[in-house]
Structure formats: C-alpha cells, structure tokens
Image (tube, rainbow, N blue to C red; front, top):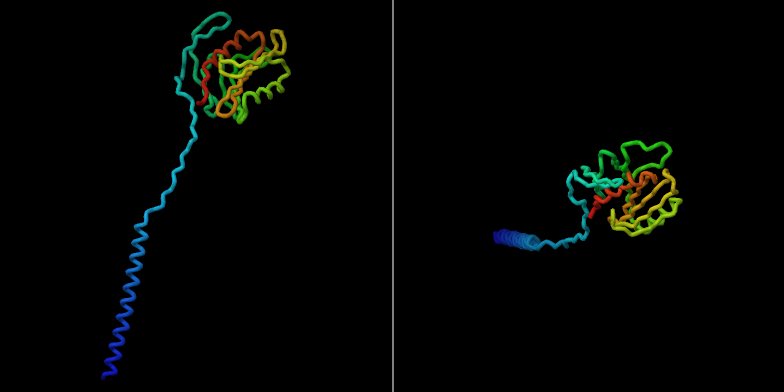
Length: 216
C-alpha cells in the first residue's frame, strides 16, 4: 500500500512540474509577443523631389491682332494653335494659313498654292533635344549653301537668328532661322519664302511669331 501511494505522489509531482514548465514557457512567449507588438515601426525617410514641371500658360482660343502688311494696317482674329508635346503655342491667321503637327516637326503653310517654280513658303518648328542654340547654328550653317547674317534678337522672339538669301531675283529663296533655348534644348524655327513674298508672307510670319509662348 505504501509503495503504491509513493508512486502516485511521485507521479503527481512530475505532472505538477510539467504543468509549471508549460506555464512558464507560455508566459515567456506571451511576453515576447507583447514586446514585439509594442515595438514602434521603423521610420521610412521621405524623398524630396526637386524636379519642376513646366507647362504652357493658359491663353484664350482667339485673339484680335493688328497686322501691318505692305504699309497697310488691318485687325484680324487669329486662332490659337499648340505645338507638338505642348512645347509652345501661338496665334495664326486661319484664313490664310494651316498648321499641322507632325511626329518630328510642325509646319505652318499657306492655304493658297504658290506659283510653279517658286521656292516653298512655310514656317517649321522642330525641337532639338540636349543641344544649345550655338551648336544648332553650326548645323544650320553647314546645311545651307548661303551667306547668313547672324544676330541676337528680342523680336519677334528672343533668339539667336540667321538670315540669308540665295540671290536678288524675285524668286530667290529667303531663309530666316530662329534658335530659342527651351527646356534644356533648342526650339528651331525656320521661315522659308521667296524674295518677292518678303513683305507679304515674310511680314505675316513675323507678326504671328510675336504671339509665340513657350513652355515655362
């Protein structure tokens, strides 16, 4: 009887020890879990962006402009057009010219056809990335086989300009080039017409260019 009772007491003590061990382990796990939950999250540094976005200024869809051509002043209503990739906008005389945006360059052209055998009449706009007006000027001087007069101008636009003609005949080609620094590159504007059209198309091109606004 005593031996059996002793074994029962021993078994009870073992069970009690196991229960105590399990309780301690459970308490430790709960404490560790609580500590992990209370631990504050690591702070993530906020990156500051210094890049500035450039946009075109808001403008009305039409504008009345006083145009002086061949010594006569007249007031016409011009329509706003926007260049490729919203790089620039300007007002044009839609009664005389059409404006088309292209994959590489934009073009302003007369609605009326030019006489056969005469040079083209148009004004083109091309954005040259990562090049200065000076470097673009060197390319233009190599492209054209004519003597250019170089100027820094403030009208009709603020730009470096080149102007030249192929001769003194009425149908001699006239080329005027403007190179404007815009958005880290150069907006290259070319006017093409013939000498006889200088006071007509040439003057109208200049007055339309005076309305040009670039992305800022």
